[in-house]
Length: 115
Image (cartoon, rainbow, N blue to C red):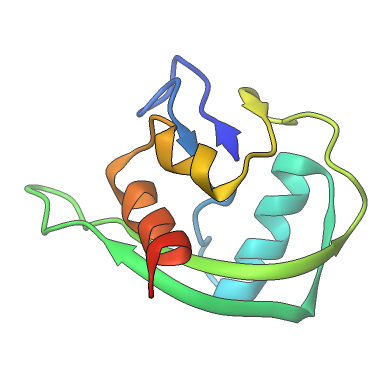
């Protein structure tokens, strides 16, 4: 999990690493780029599997956020967050107790609490 830098939106909360899709990118290209920029690890597009998604309600004056959750194998070992904040490994039970943004709460419930 990645703890957001305190000066950013949802600062200090834990989230699944990732980021925004840039113009001209598809989802897997954005994911591999963002994970490399944030954690310095390489994801293989052949080893990326979509799991679920979470989305905000329509927000006044802006598009709602949609987060896609993927599972993947990777090469390398993330030593620290390259864009600020911190990273740490947690069990599913520990993740459930972390303070997270609303969409990450929804994603973790799906990932770890589904029957």
